[in-house]
Image (cartoon, rainbow, N blue to C red; front, side):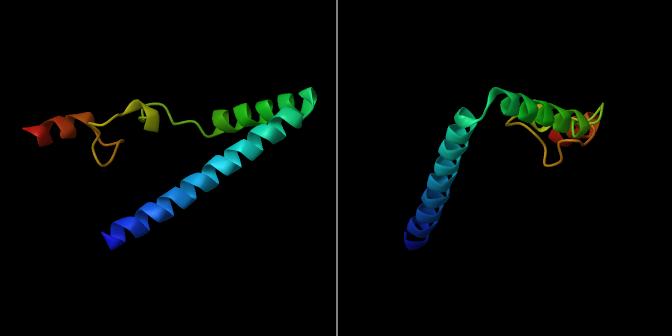
Length: 83
């Protein structure tokens, strides 16, 4: 129970920090000029174009709860492991 309470306290602290950071980023985004917002949007798009998943590999968002430990493992091997 003591360990659970300590873990819960740490997670809540980190979650509060994430919420606070998100609010600050949202507020800073609202205060930016239109040109700056457009430039940041273009930079983010360029980042994701460069760092996208290579063709043939699964993206993190493409596999769900039934995923294997290695999402890029060959699907044939995954089916064999189930039987």
